[in-house]
Image 1 (cartoon, one colour):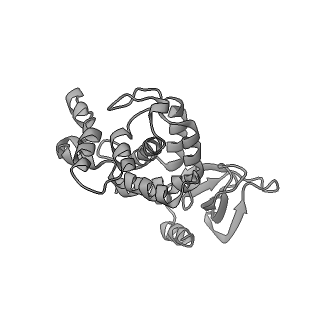
Image 2 (cartoon, rainbow, N blue to C red; image 1 turned 90 degrees about the vertical axis):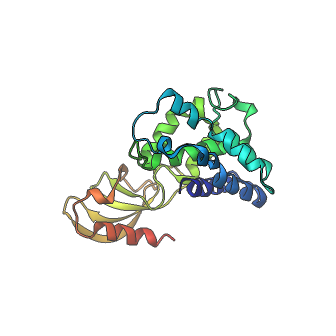
Image 3 (cartoon, one colour; image 1 turned 120 degrees about the vertical axis):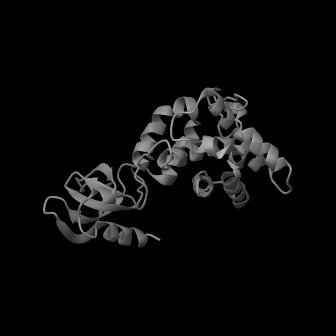
Length: 247
């Protein structure tokens, strides 16, 4: 699922960057195959719930090289896929692996792979940690971006997913719950939100779309919310139903 998710994120990011259809296809394939080397890592290490030993971590760090070697044994694997597989853990400041490449030494596609890989990794549940909410993940990545990520590519990635991604549930300052429906041009902090529940009156309200980017709208998002944490009858079904109308 991680590979499928990174594939989708790479395609979305490619569109935001204005890449052509051939480049978009290559980026998607690179996302799908970037972690193929993890097949060569023992399952007990990959699924270990506790902290890895230095030896175990060194083994995990071999997966880009192992994946690259594996892909070279096949046919029809393009240079972009090979590059992203080998270099998606490189960092702009040269502290990544396996080759400690820095900034201009790292290709655009590998820089894209680095951002997409980290985002899905930290928003997913793993044996050793609970995934962060999307908004929290973006905030953390923004703190790391100067050493880890290419600035322009990170900014394009944020535009492609939104700080509050489409379909996510949020709480507004007014005490209403809503679903993010669409990003707006003004700011990633002010999407269009369809409100459907009032926390103050503890009841459903007639769904209404609020464009938080408009000057007349005084409301704002205060937090990203997990529907399951709310002890409200049918809220998960209601939120899910509203989210499905997006697609």
